[in-house]
Amino acid sequence: MHFHKLPSLLSCDDVNMRIAAGESLALLFELARGIESDFFYEDMESLTQMLRALATDGNKHRAKVDKRKQRSVFRDVLRAVEERDFPTETIKFGPERMYIDCWVKKHTYDTFKEVLGSGMQYHLQSNEFLRNVFELGPPVMLDAATLKTMKISRFER
Image 1 (cartoon, one colour):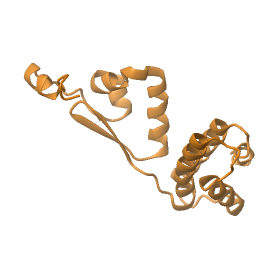
Image 2 (image 1 turned 135 degrees about the vertical axis):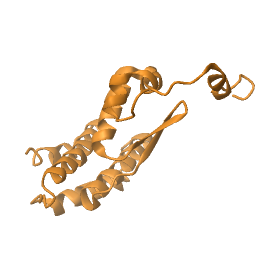
Image 3 (image 1 turned 180 degrees about the horizontal axis):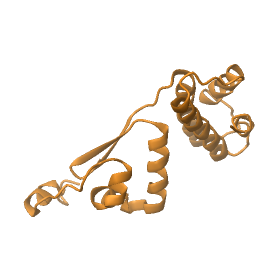
Image 4 (image 1 turned 60 degrees about the vertical axis):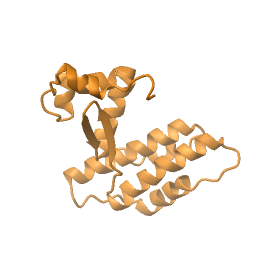
């Protein structure tokens, strides 16, 4: 594996590169543990120290928004690496909900969301391929009356 290359990217100047490296590490740890439940990484102590530092970064030279985003992501990455934990996210689309409960599903969702943009909600509701990818089953058919009650009027917005 290429675990030994990713930690060096955690000290990169670009916040997006650090975040991508951290999320990649969490994803690779999840996949490796799925293959070998007793997966062992030899430099775990050094890695967790680096992740903990990024999760609590108070560097005054970084932008406030970047620090906030970085700390949030690296708290989740640290929890994934140390405790094999993932904070479940709920995605609502129409009358349905999808739960993102692992790094693989999060990465898949984020990739489709980047490609489909504002059409993600529509595709989650009606695109059979996307519904199969996320194991959502066949599209839910709604009648016109149900759709009308789901829409928010201009005055309620």
